[in-house]
Length: 104
Image (cartoon, rainbow, N blue to C red):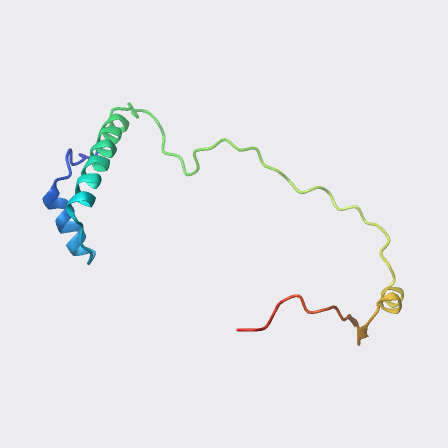
C-alpha cells in the first residue's frame, strides 16, 4: 500500500507553484490548502478499502458486447441512372455546393 502525504502545507504549495512558474496570493493559497485537506481525507478513506484477494482489472466495467447487425444485400441504384438524375455532374462525381467557408 502506498503511503500518502497526510497534509499539504503552505510551503509545499509555494514550492509547487515555483516549480510550475506561477505565483499564488494568500487567498489562493488558503483556498488550495482547504481543497487539499478535503482531498487527502477522501484519499485516506479510499486507502482503507480492503483490496486483499482482489485481482486488478484492465477495464473495471462489466459491458456486454454490442455486435454490428448482419449486412443485408439489396439491390443498389444504377450508377448511370444516379448521375443522369443529378443536377450537376463532373466525370463520375456529383458536384455539390461548397459547405465549408475557406476564409482564414
